[in-house]
Amino acid sequence: MRRSLLAAVATLALAAPAASQSVDKAATAKIINEGLNHSEVMVTAEYLDDVIGPRLTNSPAIRKAEDWTQSKFKDWGLSNVHKEGFEFGRGWWIERSSVRMLTPRPIQLTAIPVAWTPATNGAVSAPIIVAPLSKEADFAKWKGKLAGKIVLITLPDSGSEPREAPFQRLSGEDLSKLDTFQPPHFDPSAPDRALKRLGFAQKLDAFLKAEGAVAWASEAYRDGKLVSGEGYLFTKDATPSLPGVQIAAEDYRRLARLAKAGDAPTLEIDSVVHFDDSDSKAYNIIAEIPGSDPKAGYVMAGAHLDSWVAGDGAADNGAGSVMVMEAARILAKSGIKPKRTIRFALWVGEEQGLLGSMAYVEQHLATRGNPGDAPATGLARYLGWTNRWPINPKPGYGDLAAYFNLDNGSGKVRGIYAENNPAVVSTFREWLAPFNSMGATNVVIQKTGGTDHVFMQAIGLQGFQFIQDPLDYDSRVHHSSIDTYDHLKGDDMRQASTIMASFLLNAANAEKALPRPPLPTKPTTTDPYAYSKDDE
Image (cartoon, rainbow, N blue to C red; front, side, top):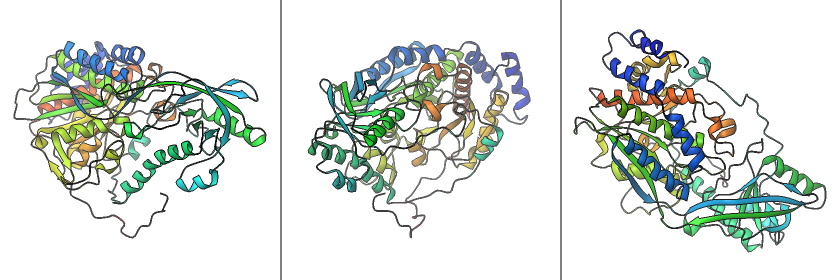
């Protein structure tokens, strides 16, 4: 994306199909000028990442981010800026922490408290015991052996040296592989198995407490001294009893080797963490550019504002959040008046199960299941949501014309996923054409998951995710202690913000809304003869 603005604008006439009337070339030129020559995306990112920092849902930092993002939207002239709350659970934050090996020699270890585990209330020291505990059947083996110990609950592995380069740009071959239709698969028992795994964390905590363990530690799942500290027991009634830490893989393996070779090492853990119960609600941030036709509905862009706490949440998903914010600024600054309202959402609770976007769907678009169904809390809401039938559209269901999501780091947009909706492919190719020379060339049929467009897709609405260059997102940065501003790529983020703004305007001004799939109904089981393991 190092072409001059003149060259970029000149491609509009060359790249767009001559017969197409769906792309406003003058408006696109304005968007490109504002997005590339006057961008504020990296300044916005720096404040979010360096000043506010990691934004665990309901933590003091996410509260600061809620206020700051609203003030930015207002400064840029957006309308109806507000926050929408939903029940979540406890806030939690780390003041400081230290994990040291005391014997056989003193070493400062790379480690982090696991989210929503309690403080140690001063430094605690104890010998370790390597007791892999991954299922309830393991408890019997270790009963009576854990009292007074710091329990290492992960089976030590032998390393995860990368097989591919840690930094990647997508090649033409990589992109072509994405253009594959994925047949839907429905297994009605899958949510129950996932819920069983979810419940294990509480059973493990209860077992360790009953056995008299001092604390527990798990092994980080990547090499490179990277830690993440994810934890999911965020409701007040599920708070763990024992402190827990995640130790860098190299340090964890050293401890395990020493324990195998001779006397068990002694660890010291000092975890100074705090719960925040001042407000059990989490809040999505909403802002709008009003449309000229109030009956035409709205289009929407979103990204999740919350993050984990090992790094600063820069790539996941500060990058997506500030690119959505920048798209809003670009459109507002350009003075373009859309036909449909353009709505911007910064979600929270995504890292705990897409809870913010789920709350929006339930508040504005549709509910799932019958009125008498038992309510679910915590991560269980996410795991069972798509298996509740029927889908019950709300009065606002038909108002959402399209939703576009960014949540794959700071990489350049290379295209867009059509999400198994072939009816939108030709339209998206036209909308993408002005940006072909910037590397955004592909519309692929593949369906994506794991982020905030999922529940819109699940109720039959048009939710889409952009294809982005991976960079080092999955290999090193995602959820990790190096998720900082330094790994963001400014040229890529300026390009992506500009494309997001253009897609929103095209969707807002399209004569007809994008064709949507039919309202989903309960599918037939894909393989009615499949067996599953009891401990799955």
